[in-house]
Length: 329
Ligand code: DGY
Image 1 (tube, rainbow, N blue to C red):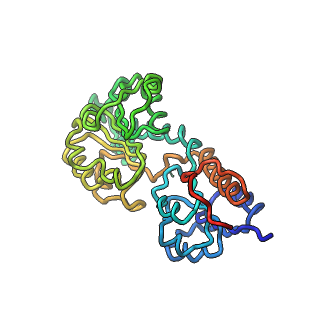
Image 2: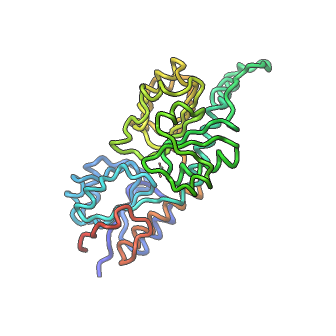
Image 3: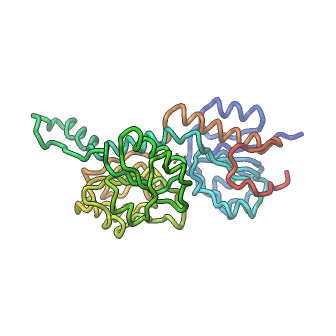
């Protein structure tokens, strides 16, 4: 019997590639080249599976051009790089890596919010420039996190983990807005109150974005929303670029319409809107919210588990489109 063939589209932990080789003929990418759409299609010819990351777009054109492809396993919880309707139509199973990154990502969201509120990046740059000559009563005064109003837009697993940190660890007043309201007992356990988006924007001292990206959430935070926030508020985005209108955010930060922002994701990343780079009151990190070593290993392992199960007659542990029928092998 011929072994299934899989593409590991980006560089990943060698032990994960070695494990995949126990089951499959594997083409990997140790040089970590980001394939163009045409290169990706070319490399997927004759492959039944792909281990992907957010940089590989799996859409209808690719699926039509890769008729043997049966499983795409994303090493990410977010899957806006997958056209799920097209995967369903093509009978291709799509999987992601939820749960294993929840706490790590929540840690980072909280850390980025704190760094933003307490002006850590700006003050560190000042110190490194050699400009620190004396203590001053008003030097880099920021805003408190403890006891403040925490607003969370998007209340999935990561939003809930952030709510716990805020309510239980920092005595914050937690409000959230989400497409669907949580059960009352979950709200009570989290100490979180459901509010409208307008109330969330108006009330939050620190607003955290943790919602998935889709056509519906494109520019969920733009000039109109920023205008509804407190001038003292901070905004932290660990969700996806495109949820915030980065040009509008830069203008709001420059004009002092909000106090500061912490951004781990960007529209068109790895490019960053040039105006954001010139502003002191924004903390910028390169899409690393899930990047603890242990968590990245767990994500890669889960993506491999999904591929192995799906292509060897098992049940993929974390399917996105469980209802989809697999293409016949
Ligand atoms: C995710 O898991 O969606 C992260 O953004 C990928 O790094």
